[in-house]
Image (cartoon, rainbow, N blue to C red):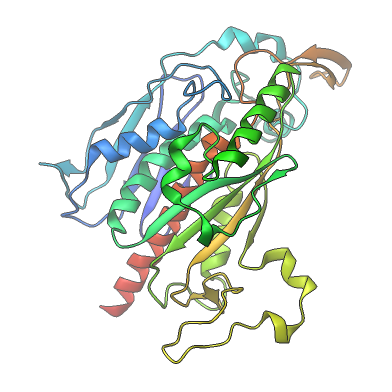
Length: 354
């Protein structure tokens, strides 16, 4: 199976399955001498881990990261950083009913057809549990990018939308509620709606907004390695993501060019930021902001019709512990993937200057 590595210089390779002994990764290309705060790394994992509130899956995993290489006396050595997160609360029997059938809108069918074999326990390698390894690497990338600020928050759940510009929000409020929406009133409505959907045995999707601030000018390339293209690829690699837009996004089609253009100030900044901090694929020093759309979780705790390995129609029902809405736990994943992209481009820019 290919495609387990992300990045050019700051590279992450992940391993492991949802119901295996452990998941983990190897980070290559991290510069030597970076003093790491391991508490902050664990804190990022705690934001993603299951069982943290009533509106997420109740799988109980401590998600404690253990480092095996690349660190000495609290600093990076410049060698590969190896780490693992042990799985401790698998309930593989919850998936025995789908051993010979395929869940709709999951990777089950295509996985089986491509590889001729699949780990049906929680989706195996295609499980979103793999993203915990990304959060570890992203937490290290954040510490490398000490002057860059990366924040993400839930801006929409179903039809409930946060109708405020990110510049009006207090990012310190993101962690003040289980939905991770920085507006308390909207967060409460979202939380109540998710609980209602959960009682119905159903799921709902949503949108996460990401904001990257204090970005230096000049990251990215003008052709195939556009900064926003890599950010899009990073976000679309996250489980359940169906859409990505940055800057004015799809709303930009409603405007004329004279309305959409960002006029310059004398210092090179712009009076507006419809470009979303990227022009010609290169960062211009303004805030980079983007939206990531997540579909409803495919596993619903209701009866549904599907097919088995013989192509026969069968009826089954979702079982086990699943998120009724994935976006609250996906916030640190979005931040992590943004950090991986920015760390990679930061190191690429530094290499080109040598």
